[in-house]
Image (cartoon, rainbow, N blue to C red):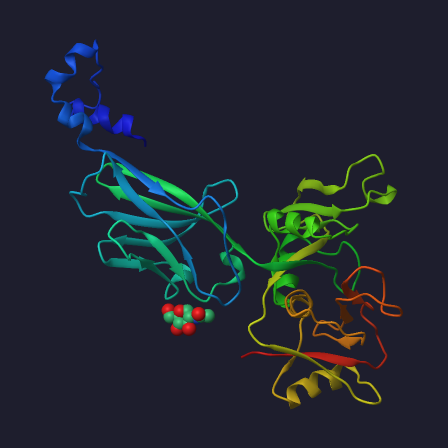
Length: 351
Ligand SMILES: *[C@@H]1O[C@H](CO)[C@@H](O)[C@H](O)[C@H]1NC(C)=O
């Protein structure tokens, strides 16, 4: 509700069914203009630009409020943070606070608290940021009947990668797509994340699920089998699809690595089982696909050696393209899911 609605209820002397409506400006002063201006306008401010963070970091989502004209709050202010979907409807409660007391909800319990360096600050601090924290947050300030809010956009720095399971193209319904991304240390990408990846060069001619249940694919170089030559470069959309019945690939999103990433080899190469064991022998685990993409993107990992990954695929990361190391573009190269053969292995060690 905005200020106008509140004003009518107050001036109606408790009779909300018959709101007072000014007949002429001349009657305003006699009607105690104090009431009119008493609840000075509450203004809630958040940054217009997105706040960027990454996996495992601590982030502050700034939010400040004041009154216009300036005045002191007469009551205890309530502050409420919630996470929003793309269409600005509420996805979940994050935290509520009255004075110095606050309560965080769901997976924000123990990770969310308020930062109130001055008395008109209502900033939210989220520690140990997770991939699913990416998105919009509403900071709502409630002073009696006044209720104002504004939105902060939290974006995780990360990398988007297309994923196809061993069985091949278009095998995943939405729920399976969610699961394969998780198994790769990632999460289904949002449209914004896919758009960002496209603007940085991602071109992929297979449609994949996104987090909101829509299906898209990013094209840099228009071509016949990928939406046709007549379409400009861009994100091709299949729109929302049936989450159980329709099957596509997945676009996964992973963020910076908290741990260490390395390659191991053996003179005779290794089977997948031997590869898993050799990572464990040094206190690590065989890496997941999302971790290889993160290492390529954030650590600049460049290695022209094919290595096993946890899902049974064999890949290698190239930052500086060169002869005999795949195409002319940087990227993670894939040998698919070999049923036999001996390779090195990429390992990941959590810190
Ligand atoms: C995040 O904040 C917590 C305390 O709230 C601190 O223990 C931790 O070291 C911080 N993590 C990073 C990555 O700064």
